[in-house]
Length: 242
Image: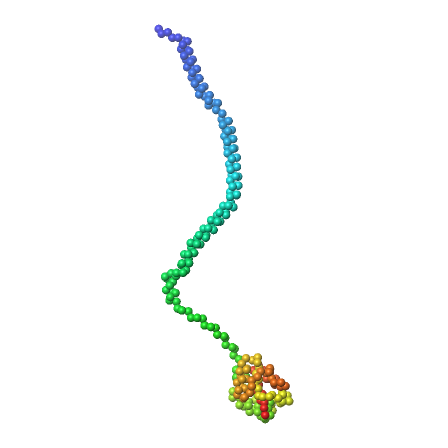
C-alpha cells in the first residue's frame, strides 16, 4: 500500500495556487497603475505650447514680409527695366536691318512704279468777268464850241456801243459850260468801282482820241451829269475843244 502524505500534497497544491495568484497579480498590477490622466495633461500642455509657438511664428513671418516688400518691389522693377532694355537692344538692329533692306517681293513693285510727275504750280483763279462793251451805257456830251458834235460822234459809236442819250435834238446832248464848267480836253469817264469799266473806257477813248479818267478825278471847277456818276455801267464821253 502506497503511503500518501496528505500534508505534502496539500502543501504542494497550496504552493501552486499561490504561485498562480502571484503571477496573475504581478502581470495585472502595471496595467492598473499606468497614469493616463497625467499623460493627457502633458499632451494638452504640449499642444498649447505648439499653438502659442505657431501664433508667434505667424506674426513674426508677417512682419518680415512687410519689411522686405519695398526691397523686393524695387528689385523686381529693376529687373523688369533691365529685361526691357535688353529686349530693345536686341530687337532694334533686327528692325533697322529689315527696314534698310526691302524684301524681294517689294523690290519689283517699287521698280515698276511709274515716276510721279511734279505737282503743277497752282495758277491763280481768273478774275471775275467785268463790264463788257455790250453792257456799257455810253453817254456822249458836247462841251465844245462845235455845234452838233455830240450827235455826230454818237452816230459813229452806235455801231460798236450802246449810246444811251442819243437824240436828234442837239441841245439835249449839250453840257453847257455855265452849268458843268469848261473841260480842257476830251475825256472818257468810267466808274472806278465797276470791274472792267476802265478797259471799256480806254478802248472808247482810243477811238475818239480822248483820255480815259475815273469819275472821281474830274478836272477842277468841272462836274458831270448825275447819270454819269450814279450808274455803275455808265461810260461818259465829254467832247471839248474849238
